[in-house]
Length: 146
Image 1 (cartoon, rainbow, N blue to C red):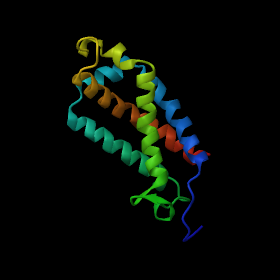
Image 2: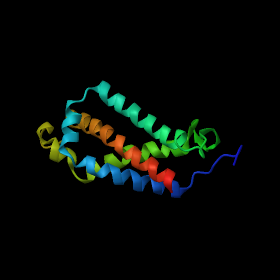
Image 3: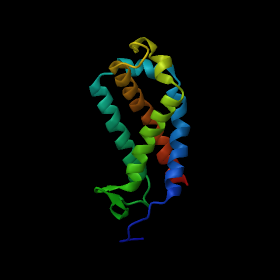
Image 4: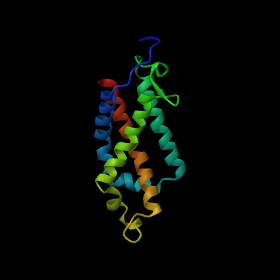
């Protein structure tokens, strides 16, 4: 496939989704993750996001000699496979967090008038960034193995 753009198939996304959800689940329902997120600074949250991107890129393109980001189909100059990996990594954690009602369970004291406050949203975003560290490992591994 040298010189040709590698096609990204729906099966690749399915593999990422399985791996991403598989490793995200335990971290979404762990109180310690939510306590950690509540105590994180925005600098730490940004560092966590950067870590997810670095792990994802490294797992897809540095750990697998068969992949070359320059040969893959792109969207806005970014390989579609990598875009999909980031969407799955963060999306799986967000979907599970909201589906399980984790913010209401772990952050009930931050709710205002029975609904989530801006603090609730901020902590939830930080918790998602923590969970994505593990989700990206599962998603990238599943994509590479299968």
